[in-house]
Length: 368
Image 1 (cartoon, rainbow, N blue to C red):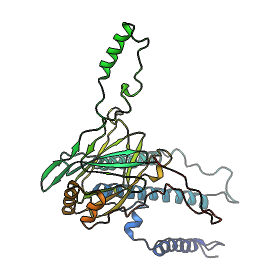
Image 2 (image 1 turned 180 degrees about the vertical axis):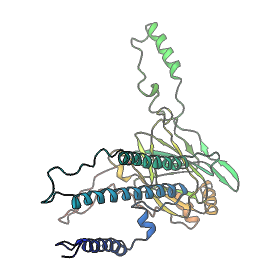
Image 3 (image 1 turned 60 degrees about the vertical axis):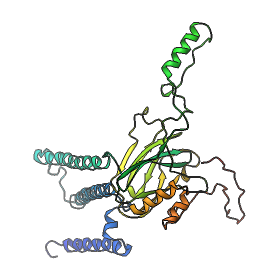
């Protein structure tokens, strides 16, 4: 038998198998028809903002680093199993290789080095993504509620002129809680009441007075029959101010590669409810979703971002100010008036059973 060979083909056989395995993996990607860019995103959608591209790049190289480490670990594992397993002529007490101080220091230091590198790039990207600049081109107040969305344009910049569109909050203002407590204490002292009322959670604020919500003269609100379409300009910094009218929701646009929880009373809950995108790269329709389980109809809480050119955005705002509704304003700039990336939830709950019989409709009024 030739040197370096064995009954199973020796080193040459192992090389052939490795080449075959590599060819199969390469063929798998080729037959899948995936572009190199799509493969390198490892399942993430194509981003349409600079922040999304930064996060996708961080994700991609993190996965590549993890794959390299995984291949190395598995290769060492199989190499140990294959070439260092017990043989018939192995001694009872094999040569010991423990307590190699330089080697142990090396494989202790390398993981810390990897963590440090990942931490550095994570902080760099996070700083970019969470950057808040003054005077964005558009400021949108986003209100989440069970189970839909309302978008209010607070400020827009058209032809270099900042236009304020905010209107008064119909809920009014919270009363002076401290003053109410003082008055109640005096009434109790004089015997007008027996027990001083407890004001409840959230610093005693009245839940029905949602004075933290913002309203505008130009708004878009979804319903059971209509997906809310938020029109935004491309190549413009946009700020989103998030607040919930009831429970915790979550604002998520996959093409933004960003998600942020939407809290009621954001100031009292000490949450950062603002974020910005420096620009949207191209016109298009991008679906948005609630990404926090918020009740029975959580799955129907979809919306759409409709990105248009700055010129068409100006025409859209002027059309809305002129009295047109969202559908008519979109159609006036040559856009489809309703959502094209998702569709309304069918509250009638009519469908087909396996037997072909229609199911009885279920009334879901008030679901939005």
